[in-house]
Image (cartoon, rainbow, N blue to C red; front, side, top):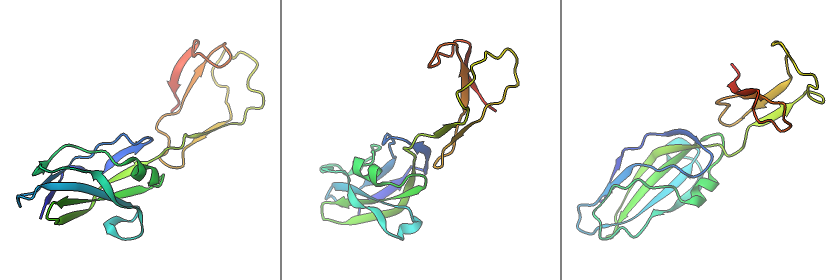
Length: 173
């Protein structure tokens, strides 16, 4: 039976694009070589619930290798099918050429957020008067319902469209 070694903790980075690589290693001591690696994806841990992605090939044509230790990416279709704003649990299955299989349920997880934050400007017409003192309050809202906001910044400029020439991009506490 091929073996699976999990060197991949959960992926705590919120993924906007499918650019993650995952360190799961595979070995086969039967003499029949590794054949392929498949993944499935669910939002329910423990292999329970409905799969968003049924088992699909992630790495193929591994023969004549007995060991595969190269981090791999998810197939594009798997990332595209993942739900946004939740934890997507990835189960890994490896085949040798007998074929025998071994499955590791919830080998790692992926968090996906492909929607930009929502920005609401409730300032009617903006501010036509140049402010010379701090303290002016503005009615602006920014939110992200999936991963939350990491940073919210402002800048100031006299140029329409804003080139941050007066005040560079500054974090709002």
